[in-house]
Image (cartoon, rainbow, N blue to C red):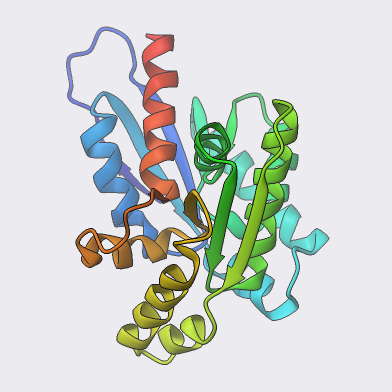
Length: 233
């Protein structure tokens, strides 16, 4: 567990945000976002990549995997978190289940992104490099649309070969597969949702290649939390 300390001298203890990751590579991504957007919030991280590895192998979230995720959420609460963010989209249903078992709010990372997509678009594209992430994000978008009585059309697609390329160390092939999928989808939807935080760098590097909105979960999730913490202060 790592922690970023708050400046000393505050009369009241700072709010604490616990982030639960299934990949250590996301720690610096969220640390940078939190430093910029949550300067007065004490942030700590819990990371366990064996959770997502189990989901990938089994192609589903098993009861055992759900229990392990819940254990991490409980640990974050015990560490003093006022709010908890789980940064893995593949285990979204388990995240929702965990919230009923702790006394602090728990947020799945893709919910603010799904809400933004539903609020601003009717035809929503969802792309991922793993089927285990594609289905939970697509399902969340449909459920968030139903919650506000709106009908949306969701087009979901896996970027074929991207994940295997990344696992073999070929980042260029990974990025090319995502770029190709975005090119294919761009003219048939109002916005595109990237189901995995790791895909965002492709859009950042493209320099305005696509004119439609392309949504990524990390900044939208942290913006949402910044609003919530501000309302509490």
